[in-house]
Image (cartoon, rainbow, N blue to C red; front, side, top):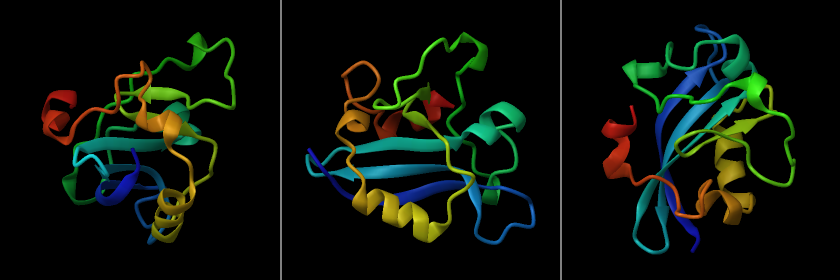
Length: 131
């Protein structure tokens, strides 16, 4: 299964006055199977120092972070660190729209598309329930 395309659901600016720097984003991934899934990225700074539920552009309500940093004893950098339903941690300082586009085109998502338990990412139809 591959990503055939994506739509941006929500963007979280690094600062309220940021014009193109985001420390969180949620996407609707259109898969080659025809499924549409929810996938999001949160930077470590947003997860540990910010409020990942507030400040999203255009009043978007994000998928919540369900993560306790102190509970992490070991992180295998070869695998995604899941921080919520369909959400992964990023060590990036921030992303731009061009950076998000590049990430989605150039990265391998085999481990991400499988989801944290191998059952895949949550479907877009589940977004309201996830919030």
